[in-house]
Image (cartoon, rainbow, N blue to C red):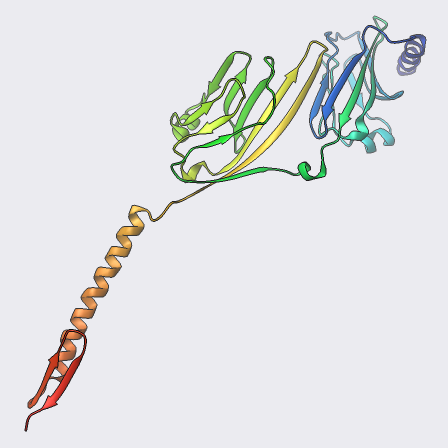
Length: 290
């Protein structure tokens, strides 16, 4: 059966001429993820094969699925391929420029072929490991701006330390849907539905941490692109807290009391019979009278 699948796949591929109606062009940025959808639901009799530049990289045959069965494929994609057994859709994660090329979907039962022409755009070296870092004083507001053009169909999800805190889906938006998030931020999150930017008002030191934005973009060509942006926020304390001020006051008062007591006992020790002293508050002068 496997040999038959391969034979029919090759036959369908080379039997097609020109550009088919199923051709889809995809442009994606390096390090994003892209999902190539089949737009069909695979049944147990369905046999599906995916090819990258004429090399088979994944297949579904009945209730079995295989990804990268040869060393060349394993070395190229390194566990970055995900195959949906229910739909046959293929996802490429952490995509690189070497992943650019033609991805061909062959559905044996229907004899259909769909071609995805994927172009991966290089990210400048200066931006590859860029993480936006912001430092603000406690009590101030800070805005995290994704710096992208938001499309109406985009899904945007904001995470704080891996916990979902805000989401935009179509014309709907949600902020802090669980009790933990509500307790932490207490209505201090503001979401801009037009740009997707997130604002934290009246910041606290506990707001420091990692914020991530996941953007899922889909179009009518059965392609879903997922990108991820990271932000690091540090909230610093302005001046001294009430506790610190109280501690300093207590220390100063203790120092004053110790100084007064020390000076009193010092006077008692030096004041002997026939000795007198004069003090101006700063210095002490002793003299004797015979």
